Amino acid sequence: MIKHARTHGLAVIPRGAGHSTSGQAQAPEGFVLDMTSLATIHDISPTQVVVDAGARWSDVLRATLPHGLTPPVLTDYLELTVGGTLSVGGLGGASHHHGAQTDNVLSLEVVTPAGETITCAPTSNREIFDAVRAGRGRNGVITRATLRLIPAPEFVQWHKLHCTDTDQLVADQRLLVNAGTFGYVEGQLKIRDGHHVAELEAVAFNASQGNLNGLAFQDIETQSTTYWDFLNRLASGEPLLREAGLWDSPHPWCNVLVPSSAAEGLLQHLQQELGADLYSDFGLVLAYPLISSKITTPRLRLPPGDLVFLIAALRYSPTDAPDVVTAMQQANDVLVTKALNAGGTLYLAPL
Ligand SMILES: Cc1cc2nc3c(=O)[nH]c(=O)nc-3n(C[C@H](O)[C@H](O)[C@H](O)COP(=O)(O)OP(=O)(O)OC[C@H]3O[C@@H](n4cnc5c(N)ncnc54)[C@H](O)[C@@H]3O)c2cc1C
Image (cartoon, rainbow, N blue to C red; front, side, top):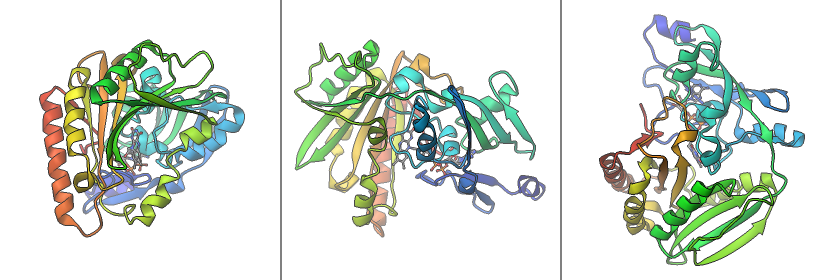
C-alpha cells in the first residue's frame, strides 16, 4: 500500500487505537492504515518481548506478567497501541526513573516511506530508529517492536497525598523525584464535591521505597494493591464516560512540557479555569515530573532544565456542542502560548 500510495502521491498514515485528539491518525485524501489487526505478542525472554505494533499495552502486560515481567514505563491508560505511543513518546509516572517508552525500545521493524521493510536499533539503521520513535507515523510505519522488560513488582503501595495548593503539590513532586524514593510519581488537579483538589500520587514498588519524610502534604490515603490493578486503574472510568455520553464526544486535550520553574504558574492558571465549562464534570489536569537526563529520544523535544513537567489539560465536551469545543480550544491556545513563552514544548500535538 505504501508503494502504491507513493506512486500516486498520496499520504499513508498509520492508526493504532485512534485515541489521538487532533487528527494525528487521519490522512485527508490519503490512506489510513488500521494497525490493530497486527497485534501478535511473539517471544518473551527475561529481558525483552517482541510484539506487533498494533498490540495494546494491556495485551503486552497480559502476556508478560505471568512471567513476572513488565515494560518499565506504562501510560496511564493501557488501551493504547504499542505503535501509537512509540510514535509520540509514551510518558508515565515511572518516567522519572526510566524515561519515555521510546527510551525502552531495543529494536523496531519499520516499513519506510519508500516501502522497504527494515530492522533498526541503536546500533543499526540508527537514523531510521531515531526518526520513527516519536515520529508521529510520518517517517515510516512501525510493524514490530522489541521492548525492554524488567521484573514486575510484587509489592504495590499506592499513596494519594492531598496538598493544600498547587505550590505544595509541585514542591512535593520535585522532592520525591529528586530523591527517587518512589517507583511512580504523578499529580492531578480536579474539582470533587465542589472543592478544588490537588493530589499527588506516589507508588512504592518495593518495601524499601516509600519514604515520605520532608513532604508538606496535608493528609494521606494509602492502599495496597496488585501491580495489574494499579496499572489498569483507568479501566473502570470507561463505562462511566460512555454512560455520560462523553466517550465518543470531542476531547480537546492539550499536553505541554514545561521547565520546572514554570510549573507552579501554569498549574495555578489551570486550577482557576477548572470547572464544568472548560472541562465537564469529568475533566482534570495532570502533572508528571520528569528527570530530563532519563529521556534521550531525539524527537521528544524537552524544555531546558534538569527537571521538567508534562502538564495535561484533559477536557471533555458534550456531543453537538461546537461552542463548547471552541471555548476549550481557545483555552488550550492560551495554555500553549503560556507554555511556549516559558520555554516549553508541545507533546502529542500534530506535526
Ligand atoms: C485515556 C488516555 C490516556 C493517556 N495517557 C497517556 C499517558 O499517560 N502518557 C502518554 O504519554 N500519553 C498518554 N495518552 C496519549 C497517547 O499516548 C497518544 O494519544 C497515543 O498516540 C495514542 O495511541 P494510539 O494507539 O491511540 O495511537 P493513534 O492515535 O492511533 O496514533 C497516534 C500517532 O501515532 C501514529 N502511529 C500509530 N500507530 C503507528 C505505527 N504502528 N507506526 C508508526 N506510527 C504510528 C499515528 O499516525 C499518529 O500520528 C493518553 C491517551 C488517552 C486517550
